[in-house]
Image 1 (cartoon, rainbow, N blue to C red):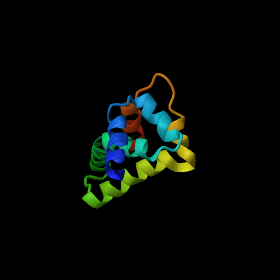
Image 2 (cartoon, rainbow, N blue to C red; image 1 turned 180 degrees about the vertical axis):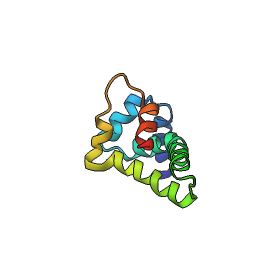
Image 3 (cartoon, rainbow, N blue to C red; image 1 turned 135 degrees about the horizontal axis):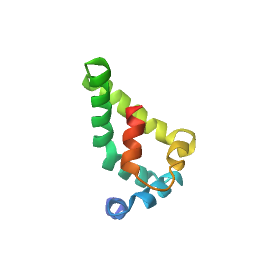
Image 4 (cartoon, rainbow, N blue to C red; image 1 turned 90 degrees about the vertical axis):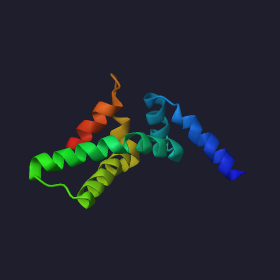
Length: 102
């Protein structure tokens, strides 16, 4: 029964728009956060990897994994302060790429 309820909740966020997903994350919804990470982890990983390669000429899997984790940790720090600062026009994908590149 718990598994069915979890799947239903997860599927609810699978079709949620970015604005609503960010709002739910900022309000502390763990399922929304999981969905946000699921949607954008590949993008962040790729940007971190390419940035490391261009700056240092190398990018180990371990370093890229660590920095990718740091990007997502930055987003949730101080009660999602960075994520909550996102304003219109709302381009989450572009904003995440910029955060990951820095």
